[in-house]
Image (cartoon, rainbow, N blue to C red; front, side, top):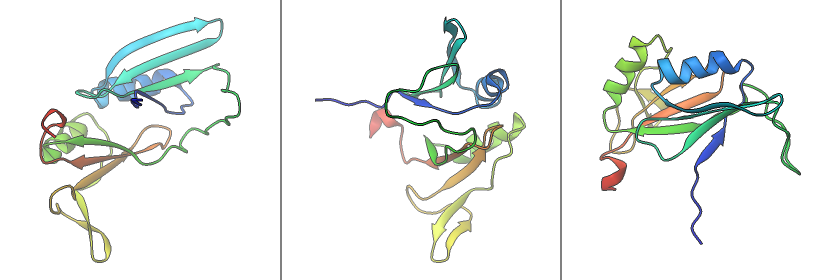
Length: 143
């Protein structure tokens, strides 16, 4: 059996504001913005080079046995890039409040890049959902 993570729901208070943030400031591709049933809207966006998308939804009924996530409660979403400094510069150019590059050291998070797989930066979307971007040593297609 093959299981592929393809869509992650990101809770949002204002779908249009979040759509603009992810599409314009973060460079995600807009795949879908559709009312799939009366009062049920889904916006799907995909980070460049990713096989996994995010979904912003309103009016969508909860799946059986699942609870609702409050906007801003989703933390730890992680993207990978091969040029972390370039990604940071691009986000800053698009007015995203992004951290300095950091790594995990002896005393926790420390400023500056670390070794292989140990360089990160962080940002939040307009609702406070937290993202990390990690430096990868090579593109996903080569790993």
